[in-house]
Image (tube, rainbow, N blue to C red; front, side):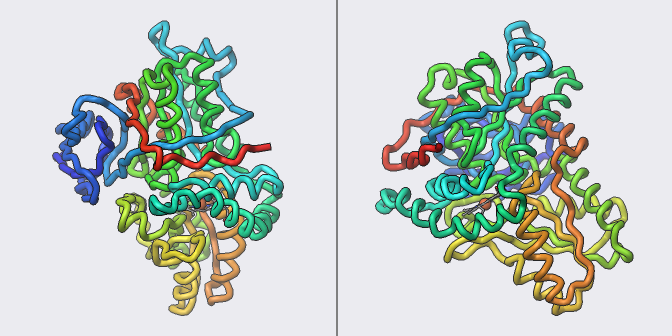
Length: 453
Ligand SMILES: C=CC1=C(C)c2cc3[nH]c(cc4nc(cc5[nH]c(cc1n2)c(C)c5CCC(=O)O)C(CCC(=O)O)=C4C)c(C)c3C=C
Ligand SMILES: [Fe+2]
């Protein structure tokens, strides 16, 4: 594999590893502090040199990722957690889940968003979401408004959200799907002779990160791989979850010494790209003229300011991801037209464009008759696939002149995908190092989550 070089945003004092490159596009430049990196000739063991002059040696986060721009920032914050940790330890007790070395107990921590399990949970779930300073980014002098604003917005938005959740069965399916993915991942790792415990940490609903972390401590895990269930990195998703984790680790003697490897993004992995292409190829067959179908990638949006002011690599990674999926399809002689748009905007600010609803109308006006929607920023079914895409966008598309509509299902427990995640975990394990967290500026502190019932 050819050598590549890149510049990237760096956490203060971070040491990062990049493994398993798939292609040779240069990493993208960001605005904050930079570090340069170059890969070894075999595309493995990709080490990023640290640019922080004051703290060159300390490894804050050890990240295994493939390529592409990464957002690294000071991750700090606080969270409250409570009941319901789900751990997959196989048939035996957790202490049986050892790695090869007698005392080594490997844990995998899956990070996800979480969702309300009942309609009663919707408003407090929304409060937690809007109280996250990575979701509503207030300028420093206005940080004190975060919680009151979260309270106000959550109360105002709750009726609309409740309608959506009511229409998909009265709650989010995310917890059940994530638990199933955790179970499948554990089985896939067992099959590769890598016995692990798999934990689930949700950002805005049960089981919260702290619950998972408590279980990790009880199980006396000796090495941890952190795997966000978001293929692409965004400040608002993976970034936010890592910040919370880092904050918990900072305050805990055991956790601050625990070797941890964080997989920051994995959209470039061959197995993921192949499994997405498989789903698209299969779904295209349900159309009478598959070659005439527009492949319509719909990604969850973020406000433009994240990308343009805060250096969020989300848009670049999303575009790169679509490119890789289309390349894979082309290699199978599937050469359909395709487009990417962003859905689910909230509030009055500018979000990434083009907007899904606007593009659907335009495509209908231009005479596109068959369209296959591909949700691409998330790997489980959730409110935005089951309600927004399947109901709202489908209706809009049909009204706009599109006659044949299809939608690719989310990956869920797709075997190719889960096996690839298992490989990602195995590749990340050797780079686990203790998470030394920066001391936190009190003004940057996360507002406390609303205590849950
Ligand atoms: C990559 C995925 C996601 C990004 C990026 C993201 C950013 C983001 N989201 C909001 C606001 C809301 N998101 C909501 C639900 C929701 N968001 C994602 C994923 C991403 N969000 C998922 C998978 C879900 C669904 C969870 C489920 O229960 O099924 C909601 C609640 C639902 C609603 O009222 O629409 C809100 C609100 C912002 C503001 C944001 C970036 C800043
Ligand atoms: Fe969202």
